[in-house]
Image 1 (cartoon, one colour):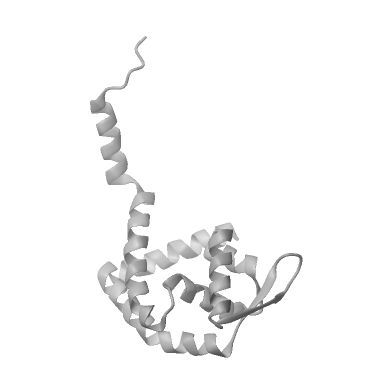
Image 2 (cartoon, one colour):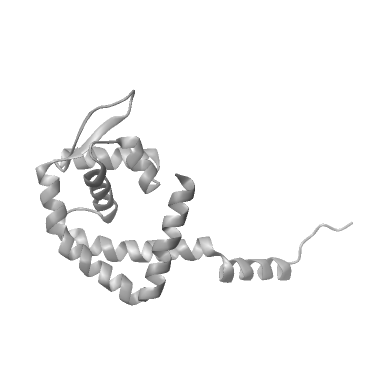
Length: 152
């Protein structure tokens, strides 16, 4: 019995994955949209991912570092690296929490940064909404909320 797969079959499979894979499309969208937000907040010397962390910490402070990672689906190393950078810049502070988990809160400098970056974030938000369309933007929010609720 011949188990060899033809290059035609492999090309067909690759074409199906390339044209239909939701995961690949989401990654492409994620990178493109993140670039728009990153460029918008760059004048404030913050990355979009750090702005998201600052937002979550502001809304839930004091919050355990691990909870920030869970809310934003961040890998532990990415979270730790950004917490260290944000602490060094004086945007957040940490206090000992349960076990090895630190409690994070936003400093007055971090609050000012969030306020200062808000108008540029809003411009990026409007740009992305115009690119994707209002209905698609609503559907993305709804899908993200469903996934977040299922994983909580």
